[in-house]
Each structure stands twice: as C-alpha cells, then as structure tokens.
Image (cartoon, rainbow, N blue to C red; front, side, top):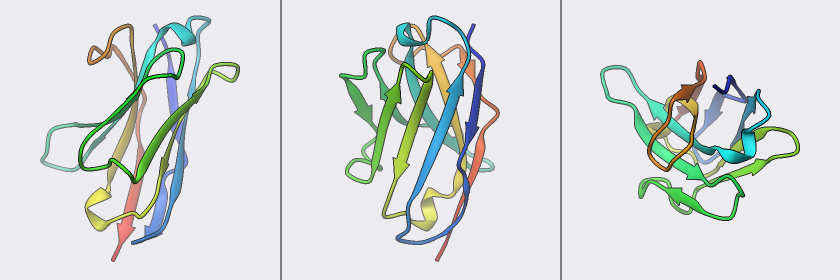
Length: 118
C-alpha cells in the first residue's frame, strides 16, 4: 500500500499555472504507475494523466494534452503535475493515485483543490 499526500492547489486566474505535488510513502514507489485524476461536484472522477514507474511513458486525457505535464522523481518518492494555460473548467479537486498497472489504481490521496477564476 502507498500513502499519498497532495499539495500545491489554490486559486489562480485563467491562463495561469500551478504545480501540484504528490508525496508518496513506501519503498516500492518506482514500481507503481502514478496518476492524477480530478473531480467536480456531481461528476465522476476524471482521469487526467499517468506516468510509468520509470517515468519514460506518460498518458494524458485529450482535454489536457499540451497544457498539463506529469513527471516524477523516484529519488524523492514524488509525482508532479504541471498545469498551465488554466481554464475555469479545470476547476476541480485533483487526486493523486498509485497502482501496479495502467488504469488500475488502488491507493488515493485526499485531494487538493484547484480553482480557476475567469
């Protein structure tokens, strides 16, 4: 099991940028696929981006391609989400997730709120 703690959310104007961080516990961090999801009230949690254990492979939702960048630092047990050109529709709680396979995530953080004002 991996424990995850997100940080870096906040209030930002449209067009601005934020960097979200997710700190992970556990000695097997590099063996996990890491991902970011987001959720707004009344909607299902939405996949945003994922990165392989080595950091070589990444995947993105079409809605964020070209604006969001996922990365990881296995030496620090951390994964990041650089978000730029923010839009009001990016407003959501952003969650970090860990899994042993793509699209199978078993461990989740508590989330960090991102609010984009127009």
